[in-house]
View 1: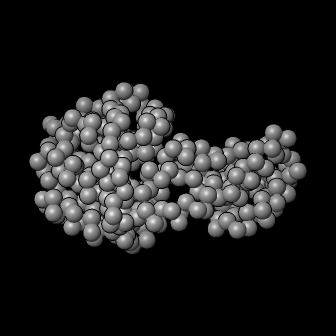
View 2: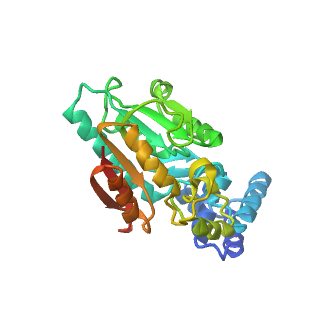
View 3: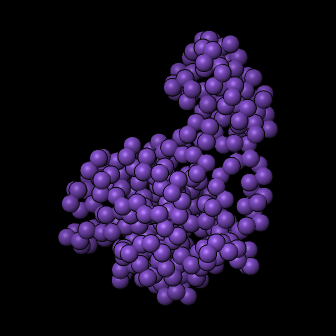
Length: 304
């Protein structure tokens, strides 16, 4: 079977997918280890038996609703190739805004006090895409000397998620910077004995009822990384507004920030305003909301 013949079959099989052509192309690029242009030019080439077998199985998985990123084990985020699995949330483009805001904050602090080595925490880190992207950009684009680079802590409640984050850090960062990272398995800050100048977090913030509906499409993302309606000791809250974890996380973050430290949090467009109020109720100053790529309220900012 040629590449083009397979594309035709795949597009027909995945006709109910919202991104049929894109899904097919990504699967082909991953399997053939070639880019879109090469595949287009060589569309009449024959697939090997091994390639055809893998692609057929991949299309069958995609038809069940399983995201392409979980099939390939990879997802591009902020221009970097991250390893992903069903143990972590798939990085989303809107979260790149959080990375940009974090970099701006760090550069400002370094310029103001170049003699201070900052301490940064990526809480509810999942794949580690936020903290690792920030650190990699500081190293590669801003050329921050190793002696001035912030010390990063990558924290998550899931041991399996931390394993993925470690894989990504080892793959994407220089060995010396990888060795400087701290990885902590913890329920929010319960096992974290440090204070920070900046806390970055993309916590679960989707209301439980919405999570249940989302997961019906077979996407297989971990509910632990989506459901915000979980209170203390894992007990569901009664509010069903996606803010159960955030109501715990904000005061804990305040207690783990140095004076003038910053909390930068991703939330849903439907509860960003309520999250900002929670920041203010917990004594955060200069609170503001940043919009995402589609103009929706997304990131909440506050200073201790």
